[in-house]
Image (cartoon, rainbow, N blue to C red):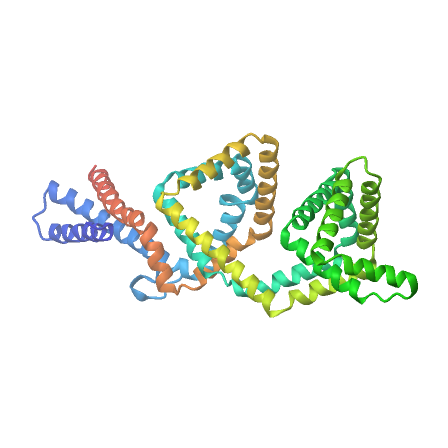
Length: 413
C-alpha cells in the first residue's frame, strides 16, 4: 500500500470515528474515543495541510505561506548548488580523493582484466582490423611526399655520404669492393667469347691506324702477321696478368689504384653541384606519377599484411596480443620512478581540470532543474521524499488520537 493512500486512510478513519461517536450513547468509552478521534482528526488535517503546503496550495487555494517549494524554487536550487560545490563535492574533497588513488596501478589492473578476457581481445582485434581497413591510405600519399621532400631539402647529403664512406674505408670495404670487381673482370675476360670479342675489336682498330714510312711498313707487316684470334689471346693474357698483379697486396699499382678511387669518391661526395642535382632529381621523382603509384601500392600492401596478421591473431584468440601486453606490463612495473612520475603528471592534470571546471557542476544541476517545469519538479521531489512526508501525516493522526485520549481523561478529572 502506498504511503499516500495510508495517510489518507488514517485521516478518514479519524473522521469517521469522530462522526460515529457523535451519534452513540454517552458513556465513558464513547467520550474517550470521541476525544481521541477528534484530536486525531485535527492532527491529521494539520499535518496534511503542512505536508501539502510544501509542494502546492492546499485545495488549490492561494493561502499565504503555502506552495513553499515553488515559491522558493530559486533559493532551493541555489542552496542545492552551494551544498554540492562547497560541501558534498567541494574541490578539496575531490582533490584529496584523487591523491589517494593510484591511477597507473588502477589503470593497469583494469587493462589486465580486459586483456585476460578472450572475448574482449577478439573484439579489440576486430575493431583494430575494421579501423585499418577503413584507413584512407591514398590520402596519406601527399603527406609522405611532403615529409620526404622536406627531408631531402634539409638533409646534408654530402656530410652523411662523407661519414659513411669514411667508415667503409676504415673497415676496408673499398679494398674488398676492388677485389670483388677484379674477380668479376677476371672471370669475364677468361671466357672464350670475351677473347673473341677482344681480338675482333683489336683487329678493327689496328686496321684504322695510318702510319707512313718505315714505321708504317713495319706496322703493316705486324698486322698482316697476326689475326683476330692471336690478338684476342694476347689481350686476354695481358688483362689476366694485369688483374693478377692488381690483386697482389704488395703490388705498387694496387695501392695507386685504391688511392685514386678514394680521391675520386671524396671529390664526388663533396661536389655541391652534384649534390644539388641529386636533390633536384629526388624532388622531381617524388612528384612523378610512378612514385605516387608506387607509394599507393606499398601502403595497400602494408594494409593487406596488417589485416592478414590481425585476422590470424584473431583466430588464435589474441594470445600474442595478451603476451605483448603482459611483457609491457612487466617491463613497466619495474620502472617505479617512471610510474611515480606519470602518477604525479596525471594527478596534477586531473586536479587542474577539477579546479578549472568545478563550477560546471553547479551549472549542470541548474540547467537540468531549469528545464523541469513546476509540475515535474514537484513530482520528482514527492517521489524522492514524499513517502517519508506522508508518514508524518499518519504519525500526526495517531499521535493526535493518543493525545486526545490523554486530554479527555485530564478533562474528566
